[in-house]
Image (cartoon, rainbow, N blue to C red):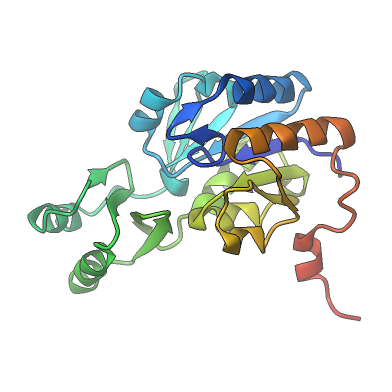
Amino acid sequence: MPVRALATDYDGTIADDGVLEPETVAALERFRASGRHLILVTGRELAELQQVCPRLDLFELVVAENGALLYDPRSKEEVPLAEPPSAELVERLKAAKAPGLSVGRSIIATWEPFETVVLEAIRELGLELQIIFNKGAVMVLPATVNKATGLAAALERLHLAAAAVVGVGDAENDHAFVKTCGFGVAVANAIPALKAEVDIVTSGARGAGVAELIDRILATDLEEVVVPRRVRRTATPA
């Protein structure tokens, strides 16, 4: 199936310390100019993302808060994909002085090694929440929400099949959405566990790796990747 879309993580994948390099922007522009779709899939809260990324207009849709919020950069429409954060849990974590505590439309975030305190608070309050890690960040979300569920909502809105999408990331929280795509990709700086799960590992790191991937898609449509690992994992043994 031809590649119709690229779904990419932000930090550590197309951005370095929150910054998009001009060469990366140019590659993303080439991809959009080819008539294909770009989707951003990030753990960042929307307000923070808008501050650090001046080119959200490159993306047709943004999946923010690790799958909990869908945003249309053109219409400015925000679509919550999960319930609001627990006020009781937020107050409990504030009282415990959780480091770098932030609260979004659904996500609650802090930093390692505070996850043990977070888990204890979740248990004591009887909440159905999960903890997702992202290179030191500790994200708290409803049990059924992750980047894969957020991407699924974006693809439904764009009338795209996951098999026609290339997913690229670098960290623990990218497993969920990358493995649902037709092709899974890890940039060179990705964690080893993600590299072991994907079809392609780029030779370049971060934005350079994504630019390399984009040029490969434009040149070959990834036709040389005959049997993606996603297909091999789900195939029934003969």
